[in-house]
Every structure is written in structure tokens, then in C-alpha cells.
Length: 554
Image 1 (cartoon, rainbow, N blue to C red):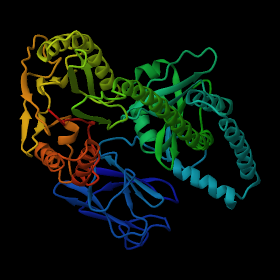
Image 2: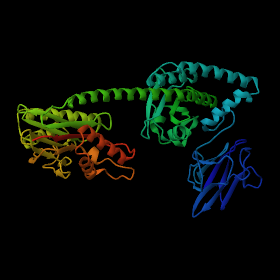
Image 3: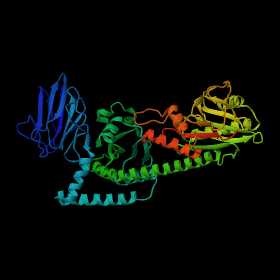
Image 4: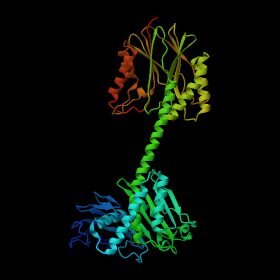
């Protein structure tokens, strides 16, 4: 059985047992639960029993029905502690055997109720209404004038150019000046669905340490309610919080940081009972302060995020500059061969790497193309390690299989197990056209014959750095006049179109074969154009690198 605690827009709160099969709520005398709220529809909503559960549905009202702050579009199951909002009226669902633990008062500030919860947005709206002419007594006008003066002072103080930590300290300072608590805390969202204590302030000589109350956070930070707890000791919510009770804390007041984008967290103040007891005027003032502060908190947080993005962008720019320095700035001019190489990163910094250099007094050309695991700065660091580890063995004239074996072992020793690289390392004999290569788990290289047929140079071992004792073999192929060697990374063949189909090696081979007699600049442009036509605007998920070599004479 459920019991309803009803807080109409006008009049005193009251309770009603939810019984029977249906209960229509509205402002019409024909409704079963009549509420004095001129913004309600005549028959606004219906609570009804269905298959052992109580449900609520909107009856086509003008202003809608909200359950826990969310507008419902279809019948919604109710549970204990749910809050139904019908325009300016609130219905709170309570289990029949549970004492009411949420009392909303509308009376004088020294009401005997122990806990007050008010929707912060309603308090702000009411304050705006008061400013526009809702106050009638001189005393009320005087209080409102004083409050506006205080808020104006607070607004100017918070308008200073401050970092987030400084801003939060300033907010607490102003709260202490106006409300004189013994301890204040600011709790903000942590960006991951939780909350963190972002700032704390205590009065001199106070050694209490605020303990997070999940109930208070739920009501204030998540539901947007302002809270006034007149006596913690008599509130069932804190009955098991011995750390709060033993500290001597008795009175609490809290308000959410709300702006148009939602809740940022909350500010909570507490005091020992003998020191002072907060009242509803204090709650309303804290709501106003929090409302002023929320926009500043959001703006400062956004500014700090923007500064952090700029810092990361500068780091990426620097990393890219370092990485570009590792790539060939100019390819060798080799008689009898045309050479072309290019790299397009997907995230500013690439995990791909290529190199073409001469050795053996120009008698050999060394080709390296690699794709390290991961992306971004970490991948670029691994690329730099790979280049450094391979430079020495290449220079002293070792064969591809021997170089890959040594590099793989040293890379494994220097990096986490999840870090490795696929690579092709090949040596081209300039006179004979023989290409001696080792393929360490990389995409098959392509040889496009002058006739248009193509061959794939399959892997001869696993990715380098994956296993400490990996051994590599090597294979060879001979390039004749007009033959084309195509080395590439999987950012090309794994590029996807809107249907999530991959570009694939066959499409790459086909476009290379069709343009095999074009200049290498034109061939590279044809590959990129063919890729763009295939992907149809789908962003490239990986870096794209390819190296083209054509033998032009015997």
C-alpha cells in the first residue's frame, strides 16, 4: 500500500492513502483528488492499479506530468520515494508503513518541521516574481532590497578573473560572510557520473569533517532541490551516520548549482545546534548565491577545459613536428627508379612510419614501412623507438630477417606487452632489381607488373615486439622494367564506407594496375581519390601511409 504526501501550489500539505483502483488528479470538482492550482488541467493525471503495480499517466494536460523531473509520455510505474510534479503541485509517493521523511513546509521560518525540501528553480522563480512587484509589505520590501544588494556584491566579487579553485574558495568565503556556518563544502560532478569534494572551508577552531550524504546529494545535486535540515539528530536519513552525529553537526542547509545546461553539483553548509540553526531565509539566500555562482563555475570550468585542449594541441603539434623530422624530407634520386612516399595522420600524430635510404655506396636501397599499435602521442613515441632501434643494424649492412629479429627482441624489452609494430623491411638491389624483404605481420606488399598483373608479398613472421624470441625469415622478388612496388599501411585497406565495407587490397591493386603507367604523383592522387569516392565522407579511422617504387630501366 502507498501513501501520498501532497504539497499543493496553494494551501497546506496533507497526506492521503492511495487505495482503490484509480485516482484522478486535477482542479475540477469532478476529480477524485482536487488540488488548488489554477495551472492544473481540470483532469490532469490519473494514478491507477495495474497488474499489482501503481502507475501514473498524463491525461493530455496543458503543462504535462513529471515523475522525478522527467516528463512522462506514457503510463509510468511508481515506486516508493518517487516525486510526481503537476504544474506547481507535488505528490510524493511513500510506502504505507514508512514515516514521512520529506516534509515540505510553507509556514514561518521557525516551523516545528525538522526537514524542508524546496525545488530550487521554484524559489528562484518566486524571487523573480517578488522583484517584479509581488511584495506588498515594507518589511518584505526591505528584506528583498537587502538580498539584492548582497547578491549584487557577490556577483561583482565572483566576476573577477579566477581559476576554478580560487572561484570555489571565493564562493565559500561569501557564504560564510552571509550565513556564518561552521563548515562549508562544495561538491561538484566528476564527469564520470559521480561526485567529488572540490572545496571546503571551516570556521576558526572547528575540526569537523563533512561526510558525504548520498541522500543529500541525490535530493540536492541530482533532483535540484534546496534542502534545510533543522536537526540532523531527529532526521531518519542520518540515523546511521554516526560520523555526522558524533561531530556535533545538527543543522544543514544546501543548494544546487543549476544553470541552463543542468546541475554542476551543490554547496552545503552545516553548524552545531548550539551555535546556530539555519532557517528558510538562509536557504533562500543560499539558493540565490548558488544560482549566481553556477554560471561562473560553468564558464571557468569551460575556460580551463579550453586551456587544457590548447595545451594538448600544442603538445600534439610538437610531437608531430618531431615525428615529421623522422620521416624522409627528401627521397634519394636513384637512376633507373622512381620513388614516392607519403603519410596522412588520422589524429594529428601518426602511428605510421616509413623510410627509404641508400646504403652500400648507393648499390642498395633500404625500404621500411611500419604501423605501431595504438594512435596519438604514445604511438608516435613507439615509432621513434622503432626508428632508433633499426637505424644501427641497417647502417652496418645486416639482412632484413636479422634486423627484424633484433629489433623485435629489443622493442619487447623496452615496451609494455601490448605495444608492438607490424613492418616490412626490404633491401632493393639497384642493379639486379632484386627486392629482399621480411614482412613482420604487415599488410601484404603489392608488386604490379608492367603487364597489369599483380603479386602479394605475404608476411614472413609475426609483428615485431610481440614475442621476445620471435624469429624471422626473408623472401625475395625481382622487379623488371615498368614493374611497380606498393607498400602501404592498413589505414588504406581498412578504410570503411557508410555500409561499413572495407576498401580492401583488391581495390588498391585495381587502381594501381589501372594507373601503373602514370607518374607516381598522379598514381598517389588516383589512390586518394579512389579512397575518397569509396568512403563517401566517412572519417578515416587510422593513419594512411604508402610508398611507391617503379623500376624504369634495366
